Length: 258
Length: 361
Image (tube, rainbow over the protein chains, first blue to last red):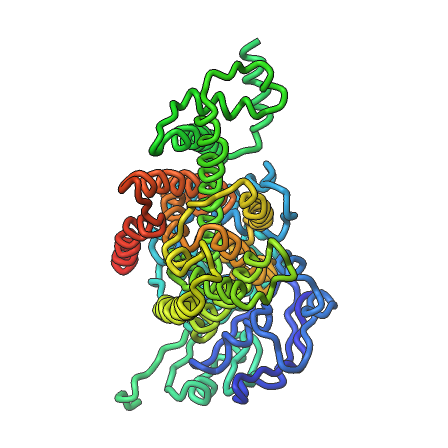
């Protein structure tokens, strides 16, 4: 069960973005997708949450063809936090989080007491109950991102897809958000920019280069000096950090001769 | 006893958030204001009729009550109130509500406050096809609805055209949107002028000035049915989809991941906005900026949740148009100002203010 991707390819204006990608995400795994800018990470994720349709190949969600399910059914299983978080209209934080309940609502039904309880709990989990009535557009970038995570919590999905969720956030908020996501014990598939963050939180890492999975495996297997050089073209020193016991990547500037 | 009743009411509404009950109160208040507006607005004109008489004439038309009311008014007053002004004021209510809802629908479609049927050229498109239809009688087989249907076709075509022109990399670009709206409006207005000028007699009341400036003059009871039905149907459809409309404001992608069928939703929005705009314009010409101002004011009062925005905008839009029409027919009496000129006079500066405010953000 979970997500199974079989031989999917995607091209845009005759330019191949990625080709013949296959992988499987099993229940409870935290998977990081890394790769240089323009390697196709975002596009790959968009194919998984149906914003873009693969040109060929199939994706199975719990054994069923993802593209044959209704949007509602998919929304109950897969929650997404994308990069964009600007909302040109004034909504209260609570209203944004309440939208997470949408896939469970029929056309005429109104919010039930249960819905309201779930919304409250989601706000509590991100520590934002106090500002439930604040205006979303007045929040800082980190707060906005947390509200979107609360929305996805209210959605109660089994799989969480995150497209560089902590882009533009300072390190405090980056760690806060990843700690939060990790504590949810959901199946997570996240495009991550920062290799150290990927090493800290992921069970498995997929490296995407030129539209292909270049390598996959545990952070220890994947994040080597050689791979980082091959994929990003930079020198890096890899150590196991004494406190975290996780891989730690130190980038070496080109001017440094070791 | 009193406690018992309020307890029951409290029980009935315990599912509601405080926000919902606030909105319910606001809707109640606005309904009272709009009822009063109708009564007062009917009384005002070259021949003044006292509101109490207006009220009595109105309720005397209700079958059961009519026998109880003793008529103490003149036949002239009855003719003015019932035959002339009441249908006009009601048409104002319906047109105002329709234009406001059109604005809400278009703003959800393009995810921007600045969308309005007049600004984005939809009114002009509807006027152009309406005049075309009248001249060539293309839709004459549809009988009384020919004008409305031809206006609807123009409205729909313009919305689709402006919307697709304004999309850059799959996203609505606001500069493109406004500019393409302006250009399409100019083209459509030019077409309307050519048609009306080249066939001056065939158009009767519906001259180019009527289409471009808008007016409620000449309203008859018979004009009310179609706009009212369309307004109610579109309102219900949009209200049913209020969650989807909310989600759409977060972006197409977000709405999709929340389980909404975005493509279908956009079609519903284009259809209902063009139906509303087309039918409204066929009875009143193009009255601009109502769809811009009213939803914005509404959001300041009740927030952006469409469950509240839709009903409140509709009532506010009706009240605004009714009173603007009162000014239109009294300001330079015995002459009449086209109402569209007045709404442009208030709406234009409002638009500039919105634009400035948005840039600051």
